[in-house]
Image 1 (cartoon, rainbow, N blue to C red):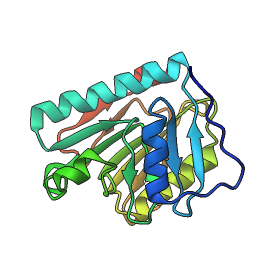
Image 2: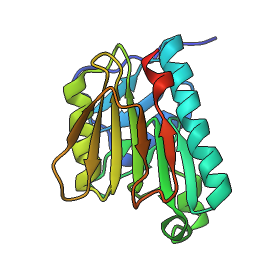
Image 3: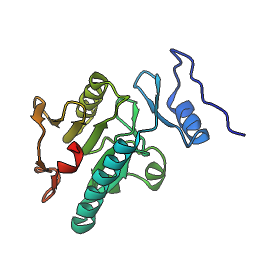
Image 4: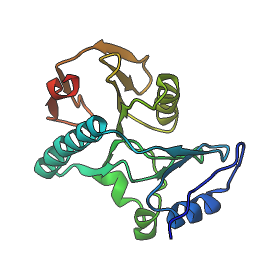
Length: 191
């Protein structure tokens, strides 16, 4: 028998409690702030799921060709240095950094901030909360990040030690120095 996961307001959990809760509720996407607050990530709609899958496929194909690291989907929770547990829509970690983790760390919530992330805004996401999450990634070691806002048809580019850059309806992006030789046509995002 399935039961609903109900989280009382202002509930705070430790990292150990979060891991136990996430393992007991594998079908529920959860995130945890550095202060222990839980967030339930609702399922996406069809178009967001379609876009997420296609974005992830582009990164997997690039990574398979160049073998520079590891690509992760939105079901992976990363334990950031500030203590938060976050699950970006697409993440990439360089091979060198990934190999520095023990097998046990790789099997659990990897204690590492990805080098690159994509957050794709769905209808239920607040833009300001995603912008705050992107800033949090930067503060924890992110080198490059894209916040794709379908509603406003923009991509916000986040780079280490730089102000974010907002691109209106870009047709094309590259991985810059972080993802060498990666480029993607974004036309499929805007339809």
